[in-house]
Image (cartoon, rainbow, N blue to C red; front, side, top):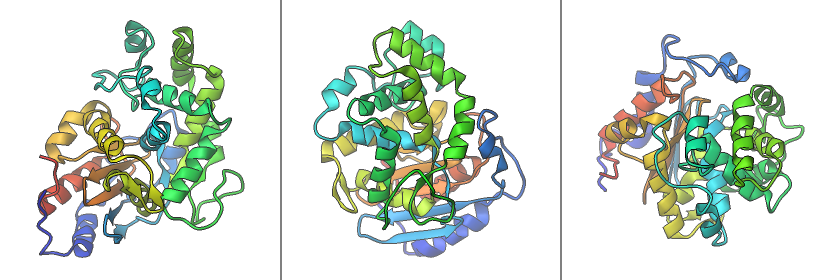
Length: 323
């Protein structure tokens, strides 16, 4: 994998990308079922790169916390695969692109309660259920995991945290608002339960899932937290996964991480990525770095408009690609 970073250096390149891609007008949409996301200014734009050599480069609003939403699914999957538990999980969820909406009930019923992959909502609910078999509060466990992987000092917890704190936190008010609009996720959970693919109560699984999605982090924190996926499973604080498992999560990100636009993202960016409807995208450059970009306005497929364009330019200008 080649890089062409001689001109300009990465720090200057990120500054240039922020200048070129920060939105100048409110083009794109925000999810109508998550009221909190509609309050974020349209012109927010941040980008951060954490390298396997220990450097961190950032520009723009890379230090502003945002709702990670479905990016959390990468990390819950990593937690579920720790300790060699992959066989039990992969009997409950597949690893194929869905080809339908990320919250499709029709596909789940047609395939008898086995979700296509862990990054659509039904698959993420199964992963959360898998975690709940070992802990009564999977969301707080994820928060601790992310805090450790981001290298943040101080205790991590979901209570009493507010924007501006150094550590990631669960925005409980936003989670409550999102839970009020989670009828579709509850329906998916009840479908899964009816097919015997949930062991925990459907409401508890959905509540934990929504709280996981409501974790607030910055681009810098997310890039650092995702570094183990670029570094053979080795994170800031030590081994997270085996090199094999880290590689395989990257493969699922490439094929399933961008809703129904995985092929388009692979064509434009050429790297494994996972987006969230909060406007963030986490991208992995195997052996080199993890990248997080954030801009809140979304395209029709639910991916950040400015973020995708910025990553396409960054890939072109650095030569970073798995192809």
